[in-house]
Image 1 (cartoon, rainbow, N blue to C red):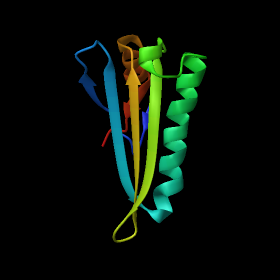
Image 2: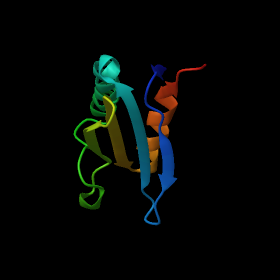
Image 3: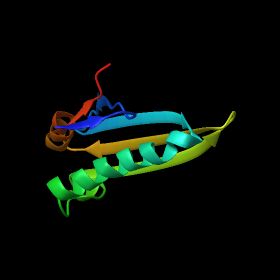
Image 4: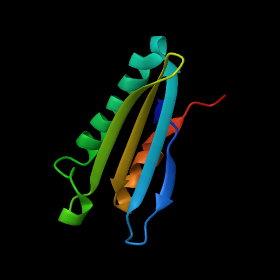
Length: 102
């Protein structure tokens, strides 16, 4: 199992049977590269575990992502990772990536 230090996914179910996984981390610049690396590790896992299945769900694919990075007031940097997926992908991702225990 992989551990997430910054990203915590929230799951929501769509009326069409799809699942949306949203994660947001807002950190100071000193931690930004670690957050980006964590997001990239999740995406690398997705490509490795579900190869060739990334793309719009309405086109028959299994998962799709949107990664947004923005600078916020006060020197904060927000990283938002949204994954739209079939339930089997969402279940596998949540089983593989656990949040860091306090």
